[in-house]
Length: 278
Image (cartoon, rainbow, N blue to C red; front, side, top):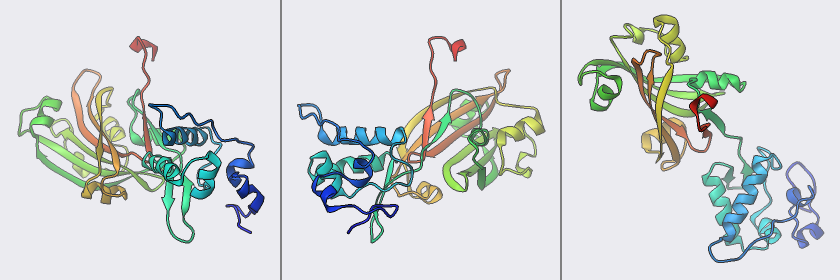
């Protein structure tokens, strides 16, 4: 007799009735599938499963039933079901493995990065009870190029500090940071420890804390170098966040281009009719 994940047995009658063990035993019934022009079946299944994951009805690490069982339960073909699961995997909500112990598993929840308030990566992770870390890839002086010079209000060719790091959450790579700082504002910065919060370093050592920032978001895919650094497949979805951070008086302090893993992060922005209401 086949077993469910967690050691419970799946009866043949349950399989004949098309009730996957993890879904059927929780009293859940399949969603009503609408078959009308302009509405795809696989997207309805994707949205329903995504909702179950979001509300915690399907827990992180939980294994979903087999494709055959799920397709029978939803009343669809395995090809349609496989399309829905593939989209969920692309969104990072499930992970799919092959082999003897393979299957479809609910992913760990994504880390939320709140872009509404200017808090560094380390501070945001601490608020969630996670350990922030950084692995320095590059720390060197260079000349400002056109984009950096414009953002930092420098002349092209002026000296800047370049810091490239992999940001870690509980030891897992989440983002690649690439930051440029005006060398004149932060002398000897490259001789400091750079594996902690750089914003705290700017505040404690130089008395310069970023007060506001302009950030733009753009979806991109991982190249060979980014894939290796973030331990994802080449072509995996990433979110590029380009940022210019300013001191309270308006002086640019940092120009950065950060790449976040699309499967492990969710960027949050609060909006309001009036900025004072945020």
